[in-house]
Amino acid sequence: EYVWLKNHILPKSDAYVHFDDRGYYFGDGIYEVIRIYNHQPFLLDAHMERFARSAHELDMPLPYSLSSIKDKTKELITKNDINNGYVYIQMTRGEQPRDHLYSRDITPVMTGFTKKREDGSTQKEGISLWTTKDIRWLRCDIKTINLLGNVMAKRQAEDHACQEALLHRDGIVTEGSSSNIFMVKRGVLYTHPANHYILNGITRQYTIAQAKQLDICVNETAFSLEQLQEADEVFATSTSLEVTPVHQIKGDIDMKIKTGPVTEQLQQGFSFSC
Ligand code: PDD
Image (tube, rainbow, N blue to C red; front, side):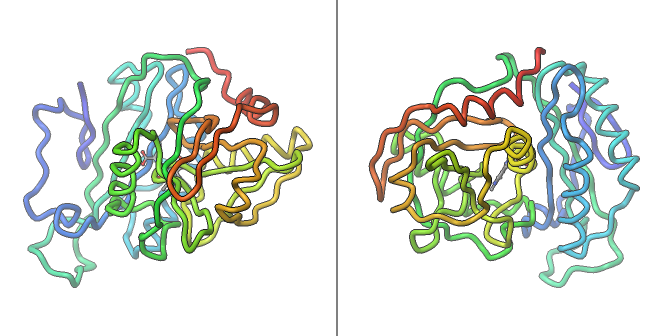
């Protein structure tokens, strides 16, 4: 198994990161998770654009051009011969003795790995959600590796036998711990607008575009837990979940839902054979 570290693609057993990497001290870094179908990274350009945006918002320079980052990503996929899976890429601000004040003279450190996935493409089985308070900072639009609010929520969900957490701020649904949340009511699709409260998922954007092509009305308006209780369909989107129906929601509210026709239509957008 090969990994990407700085300028090199090397065996994982030979890859070591520096003790003073700011990623360890401060979670001072950004990342992307990109799906691979048929040996190809899916929606790579959109992921790269978001990566560059995250870097810009955090005042991190890119150590290489976006096109060379793309090339390295593809090289890693080829080297590990991944047909169906994921590629993870990360960039920390760099190596510096611990200091809250970051230097602008350090070089960001890029790392990456791939992961195989055995099963087919679209998630058919539904998942259950556990509602929990969204306690994260106010720049959830940046894809940072600083994910404590997300990981604490995910653990809580699992401890209540749910696969994903449903985050809300004062009763307004924001997103999942690692996914975006949609609901369907009378044929209209609702999801939280892409602002500082959520990560604008690449799968979210793809799903919205698909919906518009299918003449499904899309309303990027936040909804409350109360409104969610009236939903006809609920689903989650992410690079790994694609479009996955939600069958149950527990916690502050208690509901069971069936997979509906809009969800099924949008799942068609992920029928890749691997
Ligand atoms: N998570 N919201 C959050 C908080 C996320 O962490 C993610 C992705 C998404 C969906 O984004 P996308 O469609 O671009 O994957 C929404 C990734 C998969 C992860 O952390 O593993």
